Image (tube, rainbow over all chains, first blue to last red; front, side, top):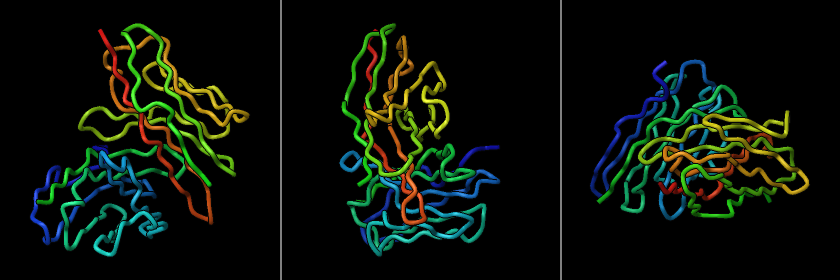
Length: 113
Length: 115
């Protein structure tokens, strides 16, 4: 298996633009997680899905952020409109169960100017 | 309240000497505990996990951790540091709350290994 795949690896955009981050989890994993990592706030869990259903989105910072999982092999995290404070590395991870090891993707480095 | 505290933001050791990264947790429930490592510009990788089996857990690359319920600690150790161990380490607690799992990350400990 290729592991968790994220795209793009780097994204530079201007404030106010829509940004879409993509994730393909490992086949057979029922859980998918989105994280954000910054120097100031460390690693934060934004949302996680179980069998394509959002279970806990309490970490989503505000309404500008939305996440979907239309099927077991694809998820998106969208920011609309983007702001400079959204600049961070966004990680996607998947796991067979929520208490098992999570497999992280390489991350998407987002820069909003 | 559930929380994870990594007691040191930075730890510096010489190559070949022991490593100790400290983690304390607060949980009203029986937690699952993990240590993850993050090398520069990489995603996180699991080192080891505790899920209520043996209290001494062995992981990859010679790391191990001991779950001490009485001390609410899950410290990470390695007998002899290698230059390749230089990275950031995260202690993580998975706790079931209100029918959903909460993943709580420590703030991280950056391990520096001197030649």
